[in-house]
Image: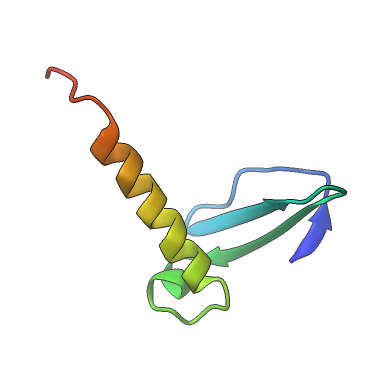
Amino acid sequence: MQPTTEYPLPSEGFCSFYVVTDDRVLTASASVEELRTHRHALSQLGDAMQMIITQYRILEPKRPR
């Protein structure tokens, strides 16, 4: 990960990660395909992110259609 002061949206097909510490923000990005197939060093972080998103969706109240 590299220090950053900018927070652009990722390009299509990519995922960006930001880690906030007491004194700086670090960033790295990877293709969704590399994360999905576990060919990237951040794949486990991507898996953890997906588990958190899933839990939010489970807890979110159902909206009438």
